[in-house]
Amino acid sequence: MATSVPSKNGNDSGSAVELTYSGKLPRTQVLAEPANTTFRAVQKSDSPNRLFCGDNLAALKALVGDPTVQGKVSLVYIDPPFATKGAFLSRKQRKAYDDDLCGAEYVENLRQRLILLNELLSPSGSIYLHLDENMVFQMKLIMLVS
Image 1 (cartoon, rainbow, N blue to C red):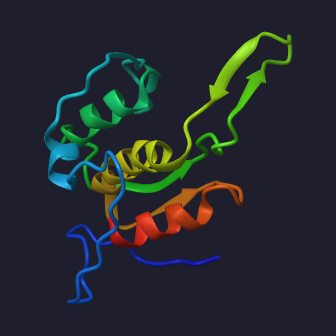
Image 2 (cartoon, rainbow, N blue to C red; image 1 turned 180 degrees about the vertical axis):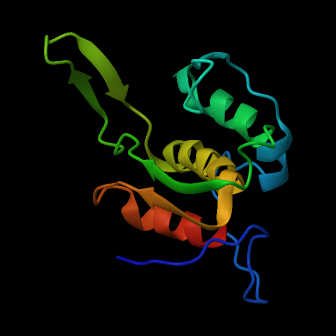
């Protein structure tokens, strides 16, 4: 397992490294673009906790704009689909979700979320990304240079 301290300003090493692939958006565009979908936030008035229902990209974009959250998150654990191209069923054998993103589309989808999550992290915060062998190498590279 590789570990590192995330940088808020990209690459601190002095020598630029760039990964290119089809559909890759510039970091500035990911941060500036409004969300294309909506979500619903549920919060009890006496609790700091929130539950978001809907597209997590829209919720992350809203949180990045929230000064009570941005730069203050200590820990993120993200368990995305594993790019298996499989269809998954619930315990009741109903359709749960399709894990149909793969390749560059998968990388960019997850990269956009990781960019936003990095904006939410405190200076000492950590992101734990749970993946299997299908995409772990590619996402390690993304996390190092994004």
